[in-house]
Image (cartoon, rainbow, N blue to C red; front, side, top):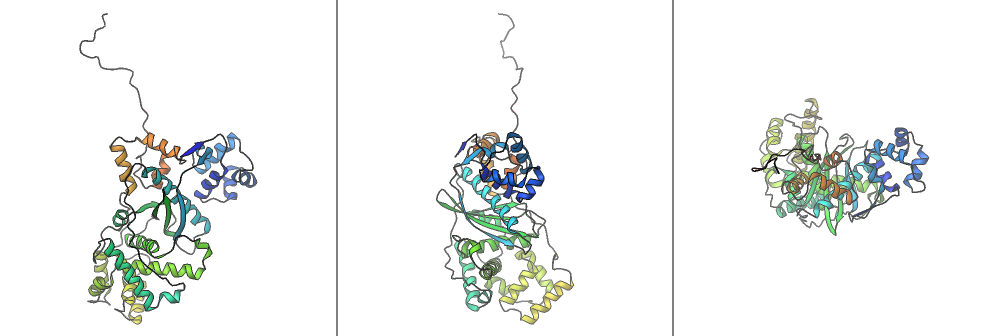
Length: 402
């Protein structure tokens, strides 16, 4: 819970600024308030007046009341793994990490009412390899193949194509949402949060115009981080080489998980060098042609020379960025939508009382912001004004006479 105060909370100003991906200088330019003043506000060394609070509130898209709360909620965020491109800055990553922290806090409030699926931990023992060279060894490849197969077995997924990966993740306690990221910088990311002593994993995917095969691979990549890698350390403390090796391992896991060695490999072996056959397999397995080609090379179904030749054909056909039969991915109705619909349909809460509940727990946001964070249908939390009618129907027997 939170305590409403009359004192401005500078830490919340900093969170709202990071949420919006703004530096101190950029916020100063948007508000016409000096960088030095904003820094003093964030550090609690000075208090802004009403007008300046209103200006910053409007610029950041946060209600004024948000800045006057002390957070008492128990949610604690640990490591965040980003599937980042080279152009992603620390500012980009911090903004998305804070957004996912808000998702975790919203989840904790809903958790008091909803029996969410708990994380089905397949308990993979993975030694890992700290270098990119180590990831290419037979030992590393076999270890990841075994890990991917164990997850399929633990979750009863069989060995065929996974029809709805988002559903499988959510069914096994991994929360999925969709955030407005620049997909050229950040494809997807995952975060581990402690809620009431329970471990909760969240996966966020890009809201941009990304194709289905890529999003499925992104989700499987994040699952790889969840089941293979440690979450208790600060990723800034590990070397770039080790971080890149973890990214490679997550990619290897995604390929092995989506395209199992035995079932996919035996089917692929029929026409391993025919790109038209890969187009057929793409519709069945919902994996990109390029991912399947790499998988064929990894499984030694095609030789290095054959792989290079086929990839040159992919480039010649102009398929590097868009392949045949690519379709935009639309995230299915999220588990958050189902949870909130359950509360509203059973008259446990109304949009108004739910927003007030979020506010009491330190999440005083606009309803449109909550809908965006939880990937809800627009208008789900729209508060309709209650109008008390001035006239009523007369009851039988009513009379104007005394």
